[in-house]
Image 1 (cartoon, rainbow, N blue to C red):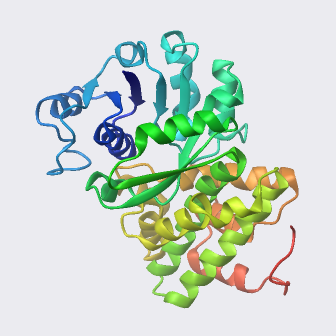
Image 2: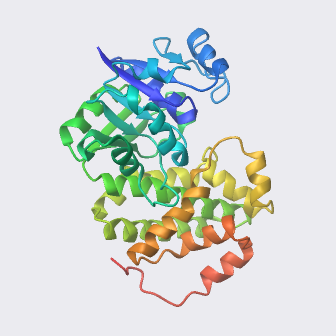
Length: 336
C-alpha cells in the first residue's frame, strides 16, 4: 500500500493527513514534535491543540520519530513553517527514500534567498523539480478537519505525479484538481498571506466591504504581475491557488494572517500580536521575501510594500493607508 509521511502535526498538516486517511488509498503517518499531541492522535484520534473535539480517522498514526515516519514513504508531505524548512530537510534527508515525491503544503518565500518552497526542496535534497509537488487553494484547515466540502490544486511540472497525488487525496468532501504551473501556484499561496494581512488591518480599522474588495482585487493584480514576471501562467492566478485562496484567506476569521492584521489595525503592536498568537502567520515573515523578490524582478507591489512597512518598520496603519491612497494615478491593468 502507498505510504504517506506527513512531516508536521500542526493544523494544516493534521487536516491534510486526515484527508488522505479518509480517502483510504494510503497508509498515513504524521511526524510530530510533541509527545502529547502524538499520543492524542494515536489513542484518542484527536489533535486537542488545534482541533479539539473533532474526530480524526483512526487509521491515521503518529510518531515523534521522523525516521520512522519517513521509512518506505512514497510521498513525503512537508507541513512545517516555511522559514524552518531548510533546517528540517537537512535533518531528514538521510531518511527520505530516493524516489519519494516531496509535497509542500507551505505558503511562504524563504528569507534571504527569496526561494519558493519547492526550490528549497530541490536545492537541499538535490532532486529534480519533477519530483516535487505543491498543494494549494482555499484550504482553511479547521473547515477541512470538520470534513466540510473543499477543493485544492495539486501542482507538479510532471503531470503524472500530480495525478498520483490527486488520487490519494480525493474523498467525499475533498476534491483535488491538477496543474503543472508550480511557479504560479506557489506564488499565489505565498502572496495571498501578505494581502490577507492588509485586509485584516483594514477590518481592524473599521473599514467595510469596499475597502476589503479593493485590497483583494488590487492584491490579486500584484500577485499576477509578480508571478507572470517569474514565468507563471496568469490564468493560474484566476484559479484555486490564486483567487480562490485569496478570497478564503482574506474573508475568513479562521485565517491566521487576516486575524493578525485585524489585531494590528485595532491598535495592537506587532510584538503584542505575536505574543498573543500561538499559530504561525506566514505572511508576517514572508512579506519581506515577497517584496525583495518583486524588487529583483522589477515589479511594483504597493500593498506588499505597505504590509512590510507595518510589520517591520513601525509604520502605523493610518500612515500606510495615507501612503497607499496618495500614490500617483495608474491604469487598472499595468505591468503585465
